[in-house]
Length: 97
Image 1 (spheres, rainbow, N blue to C red):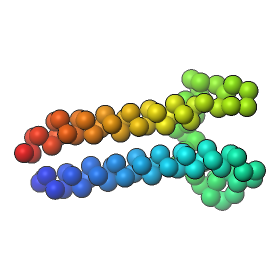
Image 2 (image 1 turned 120 degrees about the vertical axis):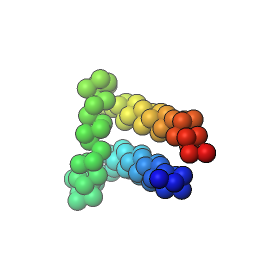
Image 3 (image 1 turned 90 degrees about the vertical axis):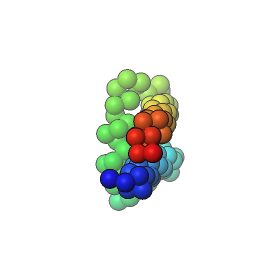
C-alpha cells in the first residue's frame, strides 16, 4: 500500500470519530428539549450513542438530575483520537517514508 492510501484510510477514521463526537453532543442537547429524544431522529442517534455512554454510566452514576458520564465519554473519545494521531505520526507514517 502506498502512503496516500494509508493517509486516506486514516483521515476516514478521523472523520468517523468526529461524526461520533458530534452525535454525542447532539444527543446531549436533545435532552434539553422535551420529547425530542423520542422522535425518529432521537431514537436513531440513541441507538449509536447509548451503548458507548452506558459504559461510562456504569462507572459514574448520575448525581441527582445531572449526568456527568457524557463529559467523561467525550474526553475519553478525544484522548483516543489524539492517541491514534500520535501513533500514526510516530510509527505508521514513518514506516512509509
